[in-house]
Length: 132
Ligand SMILES: Nc1nc2c(ncn2[C@@H]2O[C@H](COP(=O)(O)OP(=O)(O)OP(=O)(O)O)[C@@H](O)[C@H]2O)c(=O)[nH]1
Ligand SMILES: [Mg+2]
Image 1 (spheres, rainbow, N blue to C red):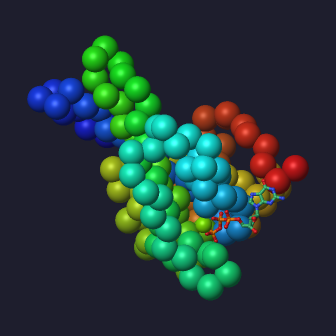
Image 2: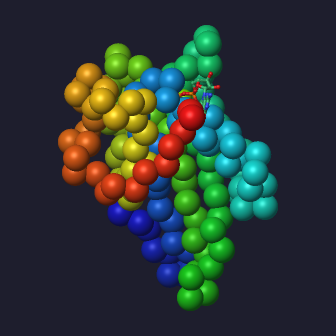
Image 3: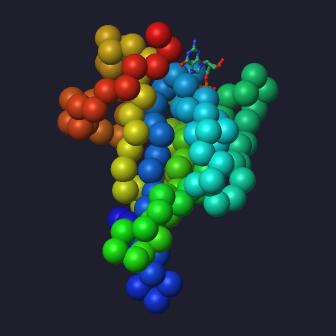
């Protein structure tokens, strides 16, 4: 759940980019890092294996301006998409406020369901087409 720090007048929430391997989660975060320098409040942290596969997570802290005088801070995370890292995905999902769900192919929902914490058809149907 989002954290409200009334003393410091800050609202902090955690968004996780979730989906199978090689579907573009890290690439999306890198794009945000390059494109929104003003809003980035630190460095992007990536822990990768060979071939640029995410090993643990990517992390990007952002500031999104103010709501009623409170600074809104968002922490963006990606999970490692490779099937064998399921316990790491569970750890990264702890305390999540929102999931940005990535699918490689719509018809691959069933084959990638092993990595999904929730059933794909329960997701909010906001679509962004990637890799086209
Ligand atoms: N053509 C195209 N390639 C893309 C796009 N987004 C990502 N890629 C490529 O797809 C490959 C995998 O992208 P990543 O961002 O590393 O994928 P990931 O989801 O973080 O993968 P894991 O870390 O293994 O979970 C890379 O070679 C990217 O350059 C896109 O929109 N279009
Ligand atoms: Mg990655």
